[in-house]
Length: 284
Image (tube, rainbow, N blue to C red; front, top):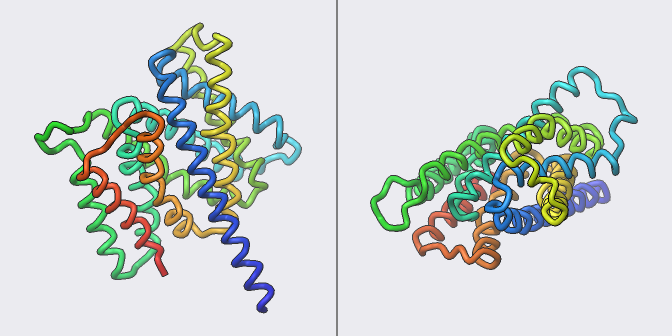
């Protein structure tokens, strides 16, 4: 029994470490992507990210060796569509507001998943903290650091997608981690690639841009989604959401160090409130 508990605990620890690595990779990739937005557009960068990631993961995991059942195919289709739309919405948000603030709003998605799966009084405090944090981030004040409303709306849409990503990711995680993500990225590319080609055109074929796009795909999709899928196999949705709560702080630091996005004290405190709210939902 002791050995079994130790094995389970070690698996959870490794899953948490994998999730942290995925967040670091994701945010470095986001910072690189933001430098590319003015050159080929948000839709073009999203097409690079999703398209290259799909090719890489299909080549590595060769998921067609294990045919999907009809229920699995339906779940993968929804999972992939959510991935594609989440990528597009959060990139559009990054283009208009700082990384840390965009992700702080987006993390409301996994926070909602965590709150809905719990019935503890502590969640009331978590909700209050999240609401307070969002209040000071949303563009409803008249001060000089007011955020772009469109950027906030895109981040809110990404939050909905993130919640759905956790729900449907959990459903497909019973498959081999790499196979499920490979199928999901392929499904995402089916509608993201045409959107990117329509908006950006032939500039997407520029070799130097393609090389950067490949790096973004590895850092922002192929590696983090694989690590997250492996984490989901050992963590509950609630615990997964708790680890994800660090995302706004990591994104804010990445934006500051790599993009020079310096936030006000109020914005940092708001992000801290949202991070604490997410952590409280699963604190034992």
